[in-house]
Every structure is written in C-alpha cells, then in structure tokens.
Length: 113
Length: 114
Figure 1 (cartoon, one colour):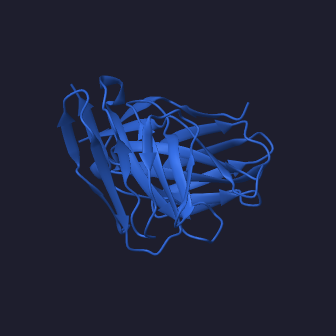
Figure 2: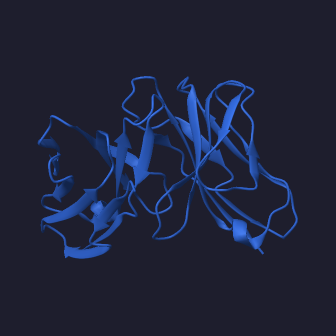
Figure 3: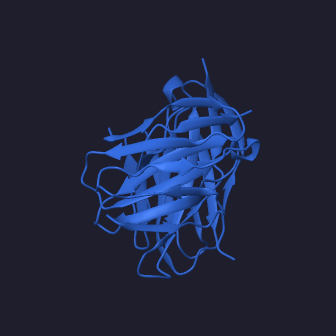
C-alpha cells in the first residue's frame, strides 16, 4: 500500500476560482509527478519534480503551477479554473532504484462548472 | 513516434474464466514495461515489471509475457475473480535520456461478472 495522499478526493467549483490540489508522500521519494487522466484516455504528465526547489512542466500544456518546498509535499494550483480543467488529477512518486515504478495517490476528481 | 497500444479496449468475462490482455509498443530504445491495475476511483498500482531479458513473469494469478523482438507484451489472468474488475494499464519506459521517459497505454477495462 502506497503512502501517498491526495486531497480533496472530489471537488466541484465554479469558473474563475483559484484551487490547490494537495499531494503528500511519506516514503521520502525525491521524484514526484502530476498526471491528468480523462476517461478512456492515457495518463498525461503535466508537472514533475526531482527534488526540493526543482519543478518542470510535462508534456501536456497546462495552466496549472506546482511548488516543491518540502520533499514530502507537491501541491498543484490552478489560478483561475475553467470547465476545460475538469478531469481526474493523479499525483505519483518514485524512488531512486531507476526502474520508474510509480506510486500513485487515489486522485482528485475536479469538476469546474 | 513512440506509442503504446492496448487491446481490447474493454472486456467482459465470467468469474472463474481466464483472459489475456495485449500491449504493443513502438518505444525505442526500450528500458522496461510495467503493468498497472487501476480500480475505479483509485490510482494505478504496479502488478509487474518486464525487462528486456525477461520472457515470462508471474505474480499470483497474473502472468506477464514480453517479446522484445516483436515489441509485444501480454497479461494473462487466471481464474478471474470479481475483484479483478479494473482498468489494466501498460506503461513502457525508454532509455532515450538519463531521466527516463514513460509512455502510457489507454488501458483495457476488464469487467468480471458473477
């Protein structure tokens, strides 16, 4: 069982609101990731971090931002939510063994009205 | 273009029956291939990893195969249970950079009926 937690599990908000999706892990992993998943589609990488104060944009263009001030915490922020941001957001982490095994949180299902 | 294709897109079987899920990839250079199981409303969980030199690997009722020459992998589930109902995702890693890169399939949605 992975020790990676996401909150909230579900979020319904109005257009234009600022939101922060929380992600924390207790495994001491340096590498953390945010993926976006839509029904029937593959996961798309939107942000990743290889350690404190290190963040990079992923493959999928995203209007979100991330921060990595502490190893265990990797929050994702949307400054102004839009209906196109409606999706499932999955946070993951991986260790340094090099086999790229991802440990995922349970996800946040975001609905923007 | 590096891609991962899974088939079938969805599958319904009766409890106790066996099934096989397929994953074809064009990722190069190849590092490893991993199968994940994703229950509804949860994040994916790793089932098994296949490296270049491995042909078959079992994890309980799950058996994965890899043919690196034809770039195909399969996941065989024996004596299915209701709890096997989930999406099964194939993920391929390349060696194209020191950071590694992951390519995700769209998953096969398996439903097991009693």
